[in-house]
Length: 182
Image 1 (cartoon, rainbow, N blue to C red):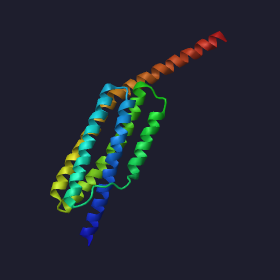
Image 2 (image 1 turned 30 degrees about the vertical axis):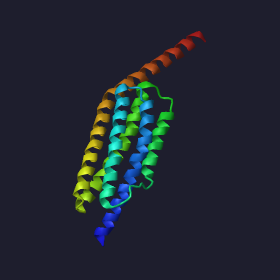
Image 3 (image 1 turned 45 degrees about the vertical axis):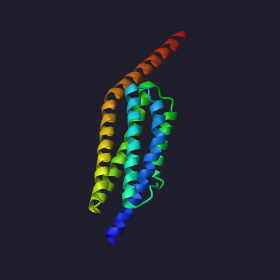
Image 4 (image 1 turned 45 degrees about the horizontal axis):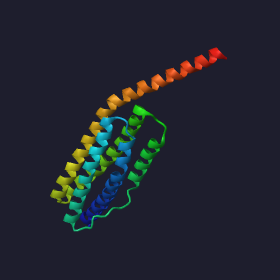
């Protein structure tokens, strides 16, 4: 009985991840378009291709389980994407926008890392070794993407800080100039 309950949970979570990945297929092009850094833009585009592969792997796993590949609304991803859209609606410029996009993208990656880690462990426990291998491969890619975002952030965050400090100094100088003319 417990074995079947775990399998039901496993399948339910696969459906959740399937929906999440399909939502990302729509969100990643928008994030790439909003990015000003060429490296960040190309990273989002590469992750889009990788995400298509994640969807294909999930479809393969569903087929192996004799299940229809179908999603169950992933409320977590809906929320994460909404937060990302809110960031893109802000009037951040240049590297500050890129820093905000990286933050939003890493939240998505951390969610996916947690989700794939769980389903990979469950697949292994359930004797679904082929599925476990596919899920572990996806998990490794999600961790790699997170690491790439961290590396990009090291440069972009410094540039964003410099950009912010530069605009703050300009604003202060404008204030002083206005005060001198008053």
